Every structure is written in C-alpha cells, then in structure tokens.
Length: 146
Image (cartoon, rainbow, N blue to C red):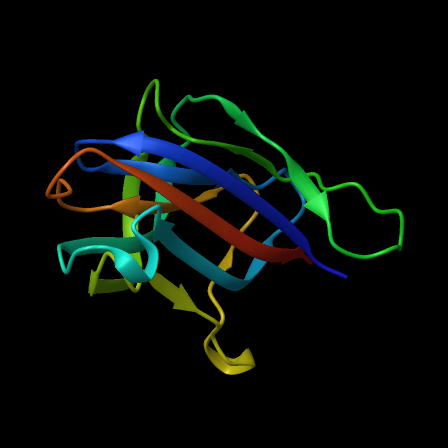
C-alpha cells in the first residue's frame, strides 16, 4: 500500500510547497504528484513553473501529515513539511513543467520512470518562478517506502 501527503500554502514567491525526507535504511518511490490552485476551472491562464527535485539539504517548515492509504497498518518512516521556514537545498531536477494555473499539474509516472530517492535523502515539489499573484497552492505526493 502507499502513503500520501497533502499541503496547502499561500504563496507569492518561488519556493517549496512540499518536502519529503526519507529515513535511514529506506528509500521512497514516487507514485504520483500534483500541484493545483484555488483557481480551478474558472481560474486565469497565468503560468505556473513547477518542478520535482531531489533535495541536498532538508530545510525546515511546518510538519505535514503522512497518511497510509491502505489498511496494512504500516507507519511511514518518511517525514514531510512545507519548507516554509527554511527552503531545502535543491539537487537534481527530476521533472519540470510550465503549466496553466487553472489546469494545475499532475503526473502519474509509469513504473519504469517513477522517481526514487535513497535513504537519508529528500524530494521536493516546488514553484521555480513566482506566481502571477498571491495564490493558495495545493500540493500532493503519493509514494511508497521500499
């Protein structure tokens, strides 16, 4: 079974929306990720520059709840936060898109292309450019621990 983390952040500048930190001895495989806004289908065509990056350093932010999507009783060793206090150090770029904010961004990689992050490492879903206006962004990552 998998785990999911969801956060909402009001942002006016580029920066992290969601950071996952893997524990020692475990790695994670990302099953899906998305960024949406309150704009929804009635929103503007403002561009969002979004990315999924590995993190060299974890950063600091408000804790986010990791939820087990199944009924297997596992607890995640992976922790999550919004990166709002201190952004993480960004590492390798895993994915990037410039998308319309009304449509948002959702990726569900096929098995062969799913991003994996090693033990004691991290992954970050972020805005790479400032939004056109201050906006509520919703970010989500579904993952499994290996």
